Length: 265
Image 1 (tube, rainbow, N blue to C red):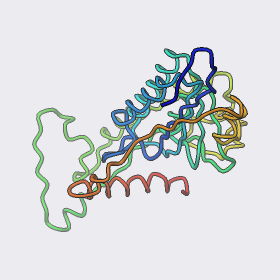
Image 2: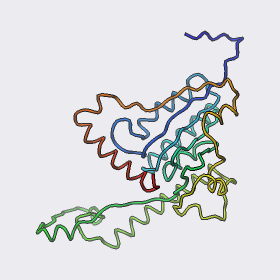
Image 3: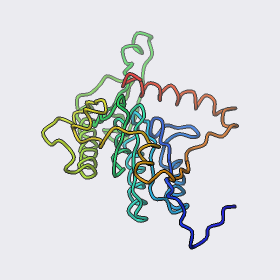
Image 4: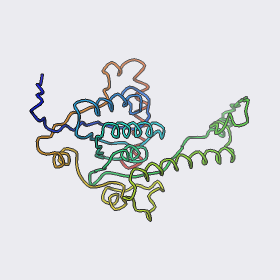
């Protein structure tokens, strides 16, 4: 046990939280608000940290889960007056950038992928396949919009229009969050809200991140050579790899790899 004496000044502490993977995926150890919330609470409240550093590597995912996690980071940072620094590894795109924007400063590697401030909805349609197989789809609803975008029925223009309206509203929320967090740092003339993504140095020019830097050297430069690091993160229980969890985790892994592949990773 370390003895803490009132007349001895302890070295500054940086709490490190790892936010890795697609956001909102199912399975144990997945990155969503329910799983990461207690981790964030510990990181901000234990040991009176001088700062919280986010090790971030995410291609995005659920806009709701991204917003919930980002909002909690800001609540804790403002309540406890703790600065937050995000350090991007391979990618902080879409929902991953939403999380990065929760930080006071965003740092990245030269080769990090940044941006993709947009919203996407993708799926498949199989009505022609069913018809060729002689399969008849029977759907009964109460409410004219209840079967919206049924993948086994022909696509309807009104369903697509309704979906695009929803996607547009979510996109507006995303843009408002980035503008709120990055403020005057953003290049107002650049088309940064089109869903495009860039490498780090171009992202600096656009105001999406603050600089090139890795976590330990940047925090050491900021808080001194005696700075200490305490890591917090999600744990994947060993026993969760067996039984029914195997299929669930395997599917989540495939979906996650597909999300990373969008950025060539």
